[in-house]
Image 1 (spheres, rainbow over the protein chains, first blue to last red):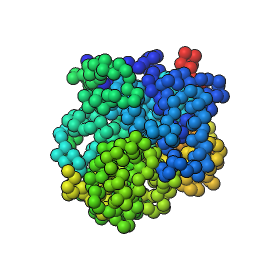
Image 2: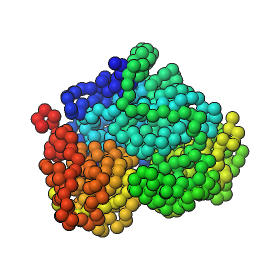
Image 3: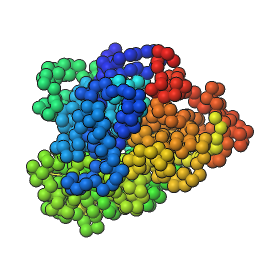
Image 4: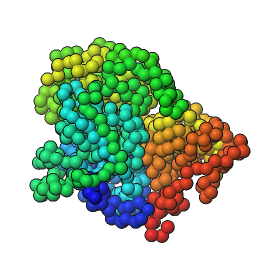
Length: 471
Length: 163
Ligand code: SF4
């Protein structure tokens, strides 16, 4: 019987395999950031260990870097210490670091692909759950905790139980690709399979609805695999993948010969069997807005805020969870989604702050102004995205519309730096998590696509962007 | 292992309420622990006692890979979390770092145990005794490998050839 792409990636990275036990898996690339690494480096020092492959380890700072003027000192002392600690650790252990002043600095999952560090067929880990993003290139990529970061630093390997393979097939091509985005596809998937729907699996996204997407859009999909509980997400590489990586700063010298072998090997065989499958049709997907406090609590922009009773089919906890979410979000069942007024707009994060995201959002706001009741900001995913955007004048479009235009980082995706919501503030956000307090204590997050966020910024409430001319 | 239950009767308790992002900068574990569960239950720190257990619903610990989540709970005195199911990274972090025991239970156990109940967990027999209510339940046994990592005291002490 044939093999799935995941099984091929798994098999080609096994160092030690035993029956009924985890396998020791080789790690091709280890990405490091300031928040989940300090204790791992401490552990190495205590045990007198070195980093086994500093040449395969790359670090940047993203989670708590300020996004305002980079020439100013960092005011938050604990953030400053965490950033200095990473600088020292990288120096002591000989690891390449893109620091706060580097033109390559940015969110770890944005810079990996941009620099050609993320390669098809490789294994990639990072102390961050959204490492699944890199799966868009046909890499097996997943997030790990700090103990495992230490294990990888010391050994370049990881003990892993073999996940199951899960096929999610999106049939059909989008008729309105500017309004129905990759974000809407992945939110629809999570809404359908649930936040635990992918638990214990590696998802391979297939079908015309996926192959039709650009690389940056595929990254948005794979990025949110973790919100469905999956260990990783994958898209089989194709010519778009190979074109995207060609000629980047760290793309290997023998790239073309690698591409030749990837073209043959990195796909699921026709007769391979997945252990789980879910199919949806692109025509059933419209712009999505999350209404609750996990990414599965999402509905169509055309719908009404649901009533907890709609969840009573499941167990009691589901109904209670919905009620609790509505209370936290201060929403009444039956309210049209388009009537929800917002206070803030955040266009950013490793889900939706790449160049294409910013281009699409800029088409929505061109020549318009942010509603007087809304504060809106754009935080590019990396300094390179920022520069590319500025080169084509996007910064001017955003600034003219009264958006703030910031330096790169995670920013209001998780509220570790000064960019946070105030208690009770309601935000249309292009990030990936709407958990309670995620963007600041008491803050209320609605997950949407960049175009939906931009349109909400202009109108002051959600709107169905399919009604706008976005060409 | 004896202790009292702190029950959160809900699913999907995520890492951002277990330890909100703004505290991920804190390097000192004792200080980190003072903010545990702050996103959900600001009284947690004042009520938790050494040896307590948390009881909750499905998908406990979903979200971020932050090891700060099991660390903050463990340094608050929590020795085990009993839940209907766990998110993978939280489960793995808990076991690998030997911070706390993630114990899977069934619906009956979940319904049977109430806030404040004193329970006794015996992982050698997979039994959970409810001392307060004089009931006994079964926990889902750990897989072989998880049990070995637990008894080794974490992933770094685990050696597959010796254990
Ligand atoms: S942008 Fe958000 S989700 Fe992505 S790495 Fe940063 S904090 Fe994590």
